Amino acid sequence: MDQYYDTREAKHMVHSLSEERVAKDELHLSRLYRETTVLEGMQITSDDDEQTCQSITLTGFNGKSFDDAICAIREIQCTGEREFHQGQLQEWLPVKLQGYDAVEMSNRYFRTRSKTERETGIPIRTDVDPKGNNLIHMEENVVKYYRGIMDAGKKKYMGAKPHMFRTGDIVEAQCSVVFVRCKGGSVKTKLVLHAIAMVNCEHTMVGGAPSAVRMKRKVGFKYEGEAEETHEKSKKHQDDVQNDEQDSMLSTEM
Image (tube, rainbow, N blue to C red):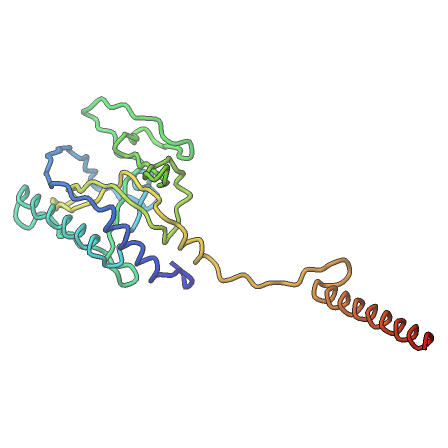
Protein backbone atom coordinates (compact mmCIF):
# COMPACT_ATOMS: atom_id res chain seq x y z
CA MET A 1 0.00 0.00 0.00
CA ASP A 2 1.57 3.26 -1.14
CA GLN A 3 1.35 6.84 0.21
CA TYR A 4 -1.83 7.56 -1.75
CA TYR A 5 -3.77 4.61 -0.29
CA ASP A 6 -6.57 5.79 2.02
CA THR A 7 -5.89 3.44 4.93
CA ARG A 8 -8.49 5.06 7.20
CA GLU A 9 -11.33 4.64 4.70
CA ALA A 10 -10.22 1.10 3.79
CA LYS A 11 -10.06 0.21 7.49
CA HIS A 12 -13.63 1.45 8.00
CA MET A 13 -14.87 -0.59 5.02
CA VAL A 14 -13.07 -3.76 6.19
CA HIS A 15 -14.63 -3.47 9.65
CA SER A 16 -18.11 -2.90 8.18
CA LEU A 17 -17.85 -5.82 5.76
CA SER A 18 -16.47 -8.10 8.48
CA GLU A 19 -19.39 -7.40 10.80
CA GLU A 20 -21.81 -7.96 7.92
CA ARG A 21 -20.36 -11.17 6.51
CA VAL A 22 -18.65 -12.96 9.40
CA ALA A 23 -19.93 -16.46 10.12
CA LYS A 24 -18.69 -18.65 12.97
CA ASP A 25 -18.58 -22.40 12.46
CA GLU A 26 -17.98 -25.01 15.12
CA LEU A 27 -14.32 -26.02 15.27
CA HIS A 28 -13.42 -29.62 14.54
CA LEU A 29 -10.09 -31.40 14.20
CA SER A 30 -9.59 -33.95 11.42
CA ARG A 31 -6.76 -36.48 11.39
CA LEU A 32 -5.01 -36.52 8.01
CA TYR A 33 -1.85 -38.61 7.96
CA ARG A 34 0.71 -38.40 5.20
CA GLU A 35 4.28 -39.60 5.41
CA THR A 36 6.54 -36.98 3.87
CA THR A 37 9.70 -37.94 2.06
CA VAL A 38 12.78 -36.55 3.81
CA LEU A 39 15.79 -36.08 1.54
CA GLU A 40 18.98 -36.32 3.55
CA GLY A 41 21.93 -34.15 2.64
CA MET A 42 20.07 -32.13 0.01
CA GLN A 43 19.87 -28.34 -0.17
CA ILE A 44 16.64 -26.86 -1.56
CA THR A 45 17.25 -23.65 -3.47
CA SER A 46 14.79 -20.76 -3.52
CA ASP A 47 13.95 -21.28 -7.20
CA ASP A 48 13.09 -24.98 -6.79
CA ASP A 49 9.81 -25.86 -8.55
CA GLU A 50 8.60 -27.60 -5.40
CA GLN A 51 8.82 -24.30 -3.51
CA THR A 52 6.80 -22.34 -6.09
CA CYS A 53 3.60 -21.27 -4.37
CA GLN A 54 0.65 -18.92 -4.39
CA SER A 55 0.57 -16.79 -1.25
CA ILE A 56 -1.21 -13.80 0.26
CA THR A 57 -0.86 -11.72 3.43
CA LEU A 58 -4.11 -10.44 4.97
CA THR A 59 -4.79 -7.83 7.63
CA GLY A 60 -8.04 -6.66 9.16
CA PHE A 61 -6.54 -3.42 10.53
CA ASN A 62 -6.90 -4.89 14.06
CA GLY A 63 -10.69 -5.05 13.75
CA LYS A 64 -12.64 -7.25 16.16
CA SER A 65 -13.68 -9.82 13.54
CA PHE A 66 -10.09 -10.22 12.35
CA ASP A 67 -8.83 -10.51 15.93
CA ASP A 68 -11.46 -13.22 16.49
CA ALA A 69 -10.07 -15.08 13.46
CA ILE A 70 -6.55 -14.93 14.92
CA CYS A 71 -7.88 -16.22 18.25
CA ALA A 72 -9.61 -19.07 16.38
CA ILE A 73 -6.32 -20.09 14.74
CA ARG A 74 -4.62 -20.11 18.14
CA GLU A 75 -7.48 -22.18 19.55
CA ILE A 76 -7.04 -24.71 16.74
CA GLN A 77 -3.34 -24.88 17.52
CA CYS A 78 -4.04 -25.50 21.21
CA THR A 79 -6.45 -28.28 20.26
CA GLY A 80 -3.93 -29.92 17.95
CA GLU A 81 -0.99 -29.47 20.33
CA ARG A 82 -2.01 -32.54 22.34
CA GLU A 83 -1.62 -34.71 19.25
CA PHE A 84 2.16 -34.28 19.53
CA HIS A 85 4.83 -34.50 22.19
CA GLN A 86 5.07 -31.52 24.52
CA GLY A 87 7.10 -28.75 22.90
CA GLN A 88 7.11 -30.45 19.48
CA LEU A 89 4.57 -28.07 17.92
CA GLN A 90 6.04 -24.67 17.15
CA GLU A 91 4.05 -21.67 18.35
CA TRP A 92 2.08 -19.91 15.63
CA LEU A 93 2.13 -16.12 15.66
CA PRO A 94 0.61 -13.55 13.30
CA VAL A 95 3.01 -11.42 11.29
CA LYS A 96 3.09 -7.62 11.26
CA LEU A 97 2.09 -5.52 8.25
CA GLN A 98 2.62 -1.76 8.62
CA GLY A 99 1.98 -2.10 12.36
CA TYR A 100 -1.17 -4.25 12.02
CA ASP A 101 -1.55 -7.95 12.83
CA ALA A 102 -1.66 -10.04 9.64
CA VAL A 103 -1.81 -13.70 8.62
CA GLU A 104 0.00 -15.42 5.79
CA MET A 105 -1.64 -18.09 3.62
CA SER A 106 0.02 -20.08 0.87
CA ASN A 107 -0.37 -23.17 -1.29
CA ARG A 108 2.30 -24.85 -3.38
CA TYR A 109 1.75 -25.54 -7.04
CA PHE A 110 3.31 -28.98 -6.62
CA ARG A 111 4.17 -31.57 -4.04
CA THR A 112 6.53 -34.51 -4.16
CA ARG A 113 5.07 -37.58 -5.82
CA SER A 114 4.81 -40.46 -3.33
CA LYS A 115 6.71 -43.61 -4.25
CA THR A 116 4.31 -45.84 -2.36
CA GLU A 117 1.04 -44.52 -3.78
CA ARG A 118 -0.37 -44.51 -7.29
CA GLU A 119 -1.43 -40.93 -7.81
CA THR A 120 -2.71 -39.18 -10.88
CA GLY A 121 -2.28 -35.44 -11.14
CA ILE A 122 -4.84 -33.02 -12.51
CA PRO A 123 -4.32 -30.59 -15.40
CA ILE A 124 -2.54 -27.47 -14.28
CA ARG A 125 -3.25 -23.95 -15.55
CA THR A 126 -1.81 -23.14 -18.95
CA ASP A 127 0.44 -20.43 -17.49
CA VAL A 128 2.37 -22.94 -15.36
CA ASP A 129 4.85 -25.41 -16.83
CA PRO A 130 5.55 -28.32 -14.46
CA LYS A 131 9.14 -29.57 -14.57
CA GLY A 132 10.55 -32.84 -13.32
CA ASN A 133 8.98 -36.26 -12.90
CA ASN A 134 8.94 -36.25 -9.11
CA LEU A 135 6.40 -33.41 -8.75
CA ILE A 136 2.65 -33.70 -9.07
CA HIS A 137 -0.15 -31.12 -9.13
CA MET A 138 -3.15 -32.33 -7.13
CA GLU A 139 -6.58 -30.95 -6.33
CA GLU A 140 -5.29 -29.90 -2.91
CA ASN A 141 -2.81 -27.58 -4.68
CA VAL A 142 -5.53 -25.68 -6.55
CA VAL A 143 -6.30 -22.12 -5.46
CA LYS A 144 -9.56 -20.72 -6.84
CA TYR A 145 -9.98 -17.03 -7.61
CA TYR A 146 -13.30 -15.18 -7.60
CA ARG A 147 -14.77 -11.68 -7.64
CA GLY A 148 -17.91 -10.81 -5.73
CA ILE A 149 -20.84 -9.12 -7.48
CA MET A 150 -24.34 -8.04 -6.50
CA ASP A 151 -27.08 -9.53 -8.70
CA ALA A 152 -30.66 -8.51 -7.93
CA GLY A 153 -29.64 -7.64 -4.39
CA LYS A 154 -27.91 -10.98 -3.79
CA LYS A 155 -24.19 -11.57 -3.34
CA LYS A 156 -22.71 -13.90 -5.96
CA TYR A 157 -19.22 -14.96 -6.98
CA MET A 158 -17.78 -15.23 -10.47
CA GLY A 159 -14.47 -16.76 -11.55
CA ALA A 160 -11.54 -14.35 -11.81
CA LYS A 161 -7.95 -14.31 -13.06
CA PRO A 162 -5.13 -14.25 -10.48
CA HIS A 163 -3.49 -11.20 -12.06
CA MET A 164 -6.46 -8.91 -11.29
CA PHE A 165 -5.62 -8.80 -7.58
CA ARG A 166 -3.52 -5.94 -6.18
CA THR A 167 -1.92 -5.10 -2.86
CA GLY A 168 -4.51 -3.22 -0.82
CA ASP A 169 -7.61 -4.90 -2.30
CA ILE A 170 -10.33 -5.94 0.15
CA VAL A 171 -10.81 -9.69 -0.21
CA GLU A 172 -12.28 -12.79 1.40
CA ALA A 173 -10.12 -15.90 1.71
CA GLN A 174 -10.67 -19.57 2.57
CA CYS A 175 -7.94 -21.72 4.07
CA SER A 176 -7.22 -24.86 6.05
CA VAL A 177 -5.15 -24.92 9.23
CA VAL A 178 -2.74 -27.85 9.00
CA PHE A 179 0.18 -29.16 11.04
CA VAL A 180 3.27 -29.91 8.98
CA ARG A 181 6.21 -31.99 10.15
CA CYS A 182 9.52 -30.22 9.69
CA LYS A 183 13.02 -31.53 9.32
CA GLY A 184 14.40 -32.26 12.76
CA GLY A 185 11.15 -33.63 14.17
CA SER A 186 9.37 -30.39 15.02
CA VAL A 187 5.89 -29.50 13.78
CA LYS A 188 4.61 -26.11 12.61
CA THR A 189 1.16 -24.67 11.98
CA LYS A 190 0.47 -23.60 8.40
CA LEU A 191 -2.49 -21.89 6.74
CA VAL A 192 -3.11 -23.52 3.35
CA LEU A 193 -4.83 -21.18 0.90
CA HIS A 194 -7.78 -22.62 -1.06
CA ALA A 195 -9.74 -19.66 -2.43
CA ILE A 196 -9.64 -15.87 -2.59
CA ALA A 197 -12.49 -13.56 -3.64
CA MET A 198 -12.32 -9.89 -4.58
CA VAL A 199 -14.78 -7.84 -2.49
CA ASN A 200 -13.75 -4.25 -3.21
CA CYS A 201 -10.87 -2.67 -5.14
CA GLU A 202 -11.91 0.99 -5.28
CA HIS A 203 -9.34 2.09 -2.67
CA THR A 204 -6.53 0.49 -4.66
CA MET A 205 -7.69 2.09 -7.91
CA VAL A 206 -8.01 5.54 -6.32
CA GLY A 207 -4.78 5.26 -4.36
CA GLY A 208 -2.67 3.91 -7.20
CA ALA A 209 -1.58 7.32 -8.45
CA PRO A 210 -1.73 11.00 -7.47
CA SER A 211 -4.37 13.29 -8.95
CA ALA A 212 -3.71 13.97 -12.61
CA VAL A 213 -2.31 17.40 -13.52
CA ARG A 214 -4.23 19.11 -16.32
CA MET A 215 -1.97 19.86 -19.27
CA LYS A 216 -2.58 22.40 -22.03
CA ARG A 217 -3.70 20.81 -25.28
CA LYS A 218 -2.22 22.13 -28.50
CA VAL A 219 -4.90 23.25 -30.98
CA GLY A 220 -3.44 23.72 -34.44
CA PHE A 221 -0.31 25.82 -33.89
CA LYS A 222 -1.45 27.35 -30.61
CA TYR A 223 -2.04 25.90 -27.15
CA GLU A 224 -5.57 25.54 -25.85
CA GLY A 225 -5.34 28.50 -23.46
CA GLU A 226 -3.80 30.74 -26.09
CA ALA A 227 -6.48 29.78 -28.62
CA GLU A 228 -9.25 30.64 -26.15
CA GLU A 229 -7.55 33.95 -25.29
CA THR A 230 -7.18 34.85 -28.98
CA HIS A 231 -10.83 33.98 -29.59
CA GLU A 232 -11.94 36.25 -26.72
CA LYS A 233 -9.77 39.12 -28.01
CA SER A 234 -11.15 38.69 -31.55
CA LYS A 235 -14.73 38.66 -30.27
CA LYS A 236 -14.09 41.80 -28.16
CA HIS A 237 -12.54 43.53 -31.18
CA GLN A 238 -15.60 42.71 -33.32
CA ASP A 239 -17.92 44.07 -30.61
CA ASP A 240 -15.88 47.31 -30.43
CA VAL A 241 -16.03 47.73 -34.23
CA GLN A 242 -19.79 47.19 -34.23
CA ASN A 243 -20.22 49.74 -31.41
CA ASP A 244 -18.08 52.29 -33.34
CA GLU A 245 -20.19 51.77 -36.49
CA GLN A 246 -23.41 52.26 -34.52
CA ASP A 247 -22.06 55.50 -32.94
CA SER A 248 -21.03 56.73 -36.41
CA MET A 249 -24.51 56.06 -37.82
CA LEU A 250 -26.16 57.92 -34.94
CA SER A 251 -23.88 60.94 -35.45
CA THR A 252 -24.69 61.06 -39.21
CA GLU A 253 -28.46 60.92 -38.60
CA MET A 254 -28.28 63.76 -36.12
